Length: 109
Image (cartoon, helix red, strand yellow):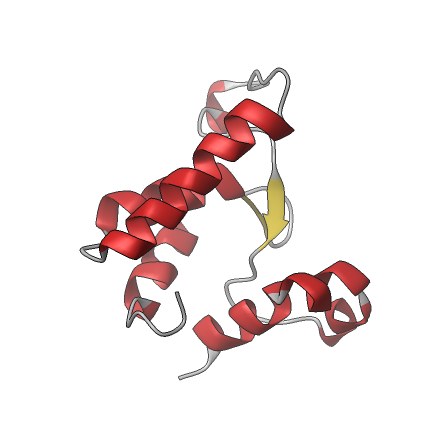
């Protein structure tokens, strides 16, 4: 994704994705917005595969608590819009998954 030239779309999807307290957003909703907005077939395929995996493998049952969470699909991730917490880099999975690098990429000008 970082080489696809999709940074403006990432930011648009970030602000459009179902959000929760602080900087958590629904990963499947974010991926769906990426899929719907991209012209890049590889990005679309990856986003669709992620949504499918979340629905088929990771989440056994999902129901929103209220209409305000209608775009919730069961997996929330750290997707900060403004400030990045450097403590996040200390999490093993953040580095192993390179999620922290993705966040730093879309936040960089």
